[in-house]
Length: 102
Image 1 (cartoon, rainbow, N blue to C red):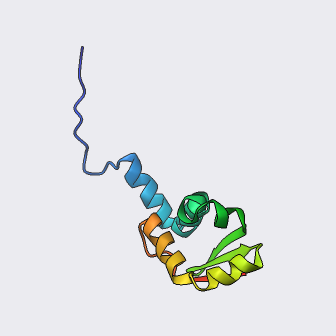
Image 2: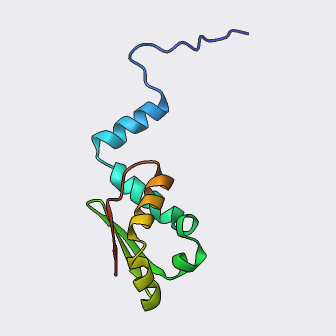
């Protein structure tokens, strides 16, 4: 049985490198991070806040949260910096600069 060499040529890219290059060229990173944030939201903030969050948006580094509970909206106003830090830590990058609660 013949085995094939596993050496890569200089002009070949791995699948991961090709995907990363495609994402960078098409400026898709922010949208991918936003989708990842929405998916991880319950893990980041827990069930109570997650269940009271109607909508999540990201616009120019601002996380915009639509919260359906007035009391929770008020409480989260004081936790904006903590929320930004939690999101950035979970995404492993500086994606969110500020949090707006609506």
